[in-house]
Image (cartoon, rainbow, N blue to C red; front, side):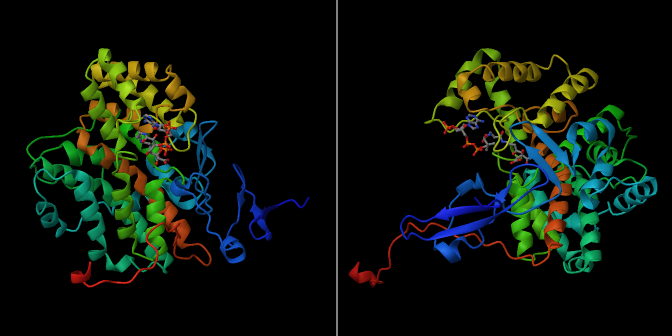
Amino acid sequence: MKKDVVTILDNASGRQIELPVKHPTQGPAVVDIGRFYRELGYFTYDPGFLSTASCQSSITYIDGEQGILQYRGYPIEQLAKQSHFLEVTYLMLNGELPGCQQLDDFNGVITHHSMLNESLKSFFRGFYHDAHPMAIMVGVVGSLSAFYNDSTDITDPRHREIAAHRMIAKMPSIAAASYKHTIGEPQVYPDNNLSYTGNLLKMMFSVPCEEYHVDPVAEKALDLIFILHIDHEQNASTSTVRLAGSSQANPFACIASGIAALWGPAHGGANEAVLNMLAEIGDVTRIPEFIARAKDKNDPFRLMGFGHRVYKNYDPRAKIIREMCHEVLARLGDENDPMFELAIRLEEIALSDDYFVERKLYPNVDFYSGLIYKALGIPTNMFTVMFAIARTVGWVAQWMEMIGEENQRIGRPRQLYVGARQRDYAPVDKR
Ligand code: SDX
């Protein structure tokens, strides 16, 4: 029996083809079905891409059964404990951890790209006062190509690098400006003496009329949460960025498409939805009622922050965040925060319920992150914006990997057509 091929026999036609198997450095191998339609006349069908690898990548590795997450081969647990956000950002963009000078230079580049073009101020003012910050983020990020024409030639590696640095550097400034607009306070300029997360906290929470001191516990907690959210293989928003990028759209437009996809409550919007759900549950005595609703096929309600397409074990990020939750609430929030108690009880009850156990529905990264954001004083409608800031690194790294590929092609899936057969037009007086 030949190795490294999968033989497909079409019983209807008797035709048989051999498809090559491609082997990974770790994880499942793949069957290259590129010839499938040409040789057998069938499309493959996999809505939601449960069994489909859309690309090859060397950035992030996930093992859903073992609950493993690695960035460029480094276990997330080690990076979370020993590294910091901008160092991991360098790793994601360049494939290797930086030396001292490289890290210094990179810090300098990101720091000196954090300001926004002054004309953007009037753009923020154009949004209604109660606009959701994610709506502002999508609009403003999508508009950046109008300000940075000097870095939108995607065929030029230097343009790609500058656009990448600008995107990563400006996300905190855009996020903070979006927040300030919704609370009617003046935008705060970045402070080049602060760290990436310290700067974000100051731009969000300082006001011109008084001193602001960054709380080191909040700064460190945000840095850690951002590391955990940087990338996650070919999730919905990253796949959106790759597909937009495959049409050779400019990088700012591609990142805006990722922000839009992340916003959904089934994806990055889940952290906001978790807090709203905990508020709706309100008390541990009502948990059984919501568990029953989550199990009821006729009820669209799902337990937000539970379940994952890939992790059929505990999300390793949720484990790390859960531990950090205790520390942050003890230092910054209220360790007896009823929401935290409620979350712990909900997790215990859900994880002992057959419905969740059978379907391997464990808490995911979004289940606890909102509780930490809340303890840091970040409003619920900014939770997904926090996710977008960190995930911009993953989107940019994956976009650069795709654009840099040999014979990169536009992504163009096909379909199973189940609509009307051909029919003739009838004039309206004949229908
Ligand atoms: C993120 O892809 C990524 O990597 C995403 C992410 C990243 O870093 O980019 O990890 C970030 O998006 C985490 C996920 C955040 N979303 C939520 O917490 C929303 C709640 N979760 C669900 O919507 C759901 O679990 C998904 C969307 C996360 C996964 O959906 P799947 O893989 O399509 O699973 P499914 O809908 O097919 O569910 C399988 C079964 C179904 O029951 P049966 O039809 O088999 O009887 O599990 C049930 C579902 O009804 N189920 C849930 C549930 N999640 C799945 N039932 C109740 N509550 C839930 N949360």
